[in-house]
Image (cartoon, rainbow, N blue to C red):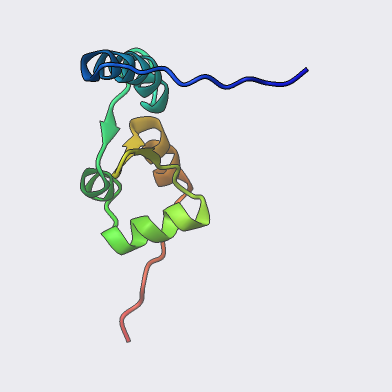
Length: 97
């Protein structure tokens, strides 16, 4: 049995409506789900909250110490992930020579 593909001619308005329906259905799946009251921070806010620099934050993301959530081009961090990373961070005291 052969698969038959058909081509439908759709008006621009109908095409817009089809695209809108797909977007409305699929976009919520891409957004990190917030549990009750969970807050998300930007890279800058997360670095400030963890008291680390932006390059250190990037390093921790690459090493898997902090989990980042991507939303398009934005990178967000959950409050729980930041707290967990802060607890696991090594604190080194430097001695002055």
